[in-house]
Length: 91
Image 1 (cartoon, rainbow, N blue to C red):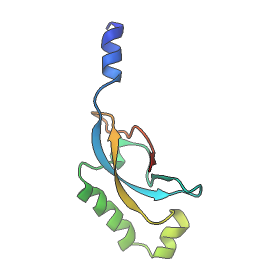
Image 2 (cartoon, rainbow, N blue to C red; image 1 turned 30 degrees about the horizontal axis):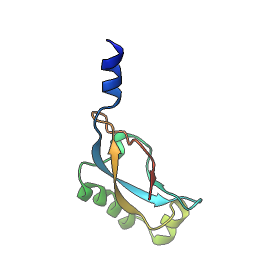
Image 3 (tube, helix red, strand yellow; image 1 turned 90 degrees about the vertical axis):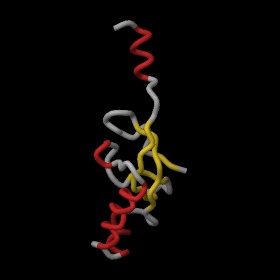
Image 4 (cartoon, helix red, strand yellow; image 1 turned 60 degrees about the vertical axis):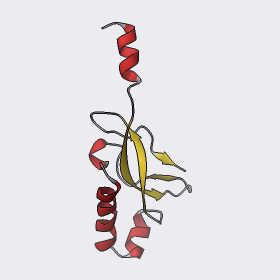
């Protein structure tokens, strides 16, 4: 493999997926789950179902113990193939 091929593969196009986010203790919006493709979703509706599962099975007080509220679904750029998010921070 030559260096041009390696550079091209590293600059592969992003895939937009969806994740559940929260506001951390420093006031920054970030991922609820690990930065792994298994915690990204193909559609906003699928990510919303994950968020809905959190809220259906926990009280607001319980959620606030672990996450900065509000929880929100956000789009995220991911690497193609394995769908790991390219970043963990959101505006």
